[in-house]
Length: 131
Image (cartoon, rainbow, N blue to C red; front, side, top):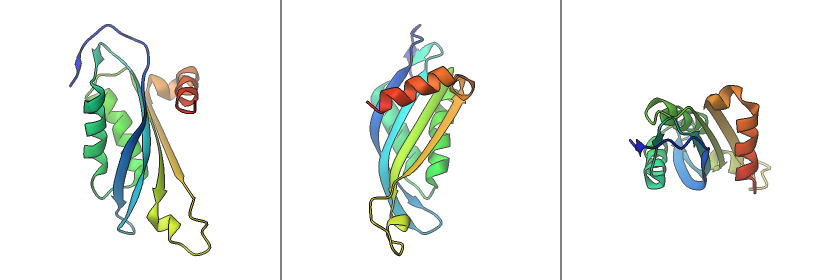
């Protein structure tokens, strides 16, 4: 996965479409994933990262698990020094409940490697995705 490169600066991809099916209610959810990684000697094609997100999310799984699996995969398989993932999604099971307005969103986030213990890296990621 990826190609050799000495770049060390953070790579961020915003608003990648993500959808899946919650195994608890058997109802779909959809939203966007924002991901970042700190290269560890390898860079990765943006399309490949989007396909990885599709592969992880297109099954019966929880949004929380998807968020963790994306960040972990970038470190484990992509050899990144650190990775971050934030997913904001509409959960149909939540939207169909009683007394709902219909605009509720669930936000999950995961930080792995250098992001886990580096508040500056996390803040840089969060600022970039909120522009």
